[in-house]
Picture 1 (cartoon, one colour):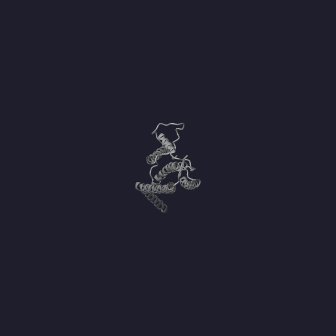
Picture 2 (cartoon, one colour; picture 1 turned 45 degrees about the vertical axis):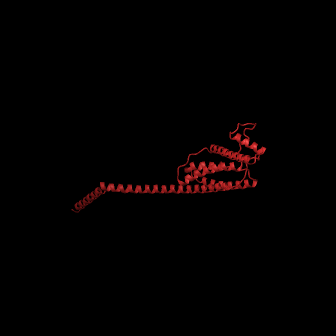
Picture 3 (cartoon, helix red, strand yellow; picture 1 turned 90 degrees about the vertical axis):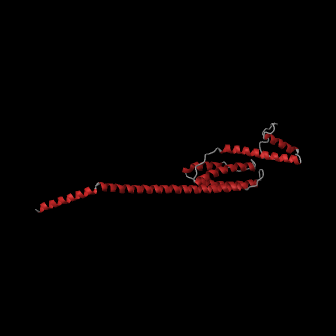
Length: 246
């Protein structure tokens, strides 16, 4: 009798456990469990995406800080250049001093630009190339032409760095050798025109000596105001030859 009651009690327990398990794995419970798992997965994914986004933002901020340092250094070089009052080919001392300042500031800017990661090579590459194009100055060409060329290269490098710091799109890369050649050609015509106008005013006021008259003719030929004559058609191609200088 006892054994029968024990077996009946065991059956009741098993029946209750089966009922409990059926309820445990009911649709509602399964949905809740899946929801909890999905919620946990989304939480982990969200944390990962947030961390990744934060790392990218930190990397971009660091890159922009390096670009800003390079921008400030090149701006200093530009201001230093524009403050110079060198005449013609300068002197050994003035050329040495300029080349020293140029080397120091270019090296400093170059170091900051090189820290830009590969993700920003479209800014890093052109900026480094432009700095390499800025030559030392040994008196040829004369200062105003050297200054004009250097200013063009600096301005282009500042353009690339400035847009990057602001978060703007990378500008289209230009062939700066062609830009420099074309722009310097325009500057030379302006310089020659200004020099010819000065000679014309001097001729009006007091007349020109033989050397100044020859220079005026050279300028007219170079500007296309007179047909070119003589064995050296390029004699007046350099606007840096002022009257009476060689």
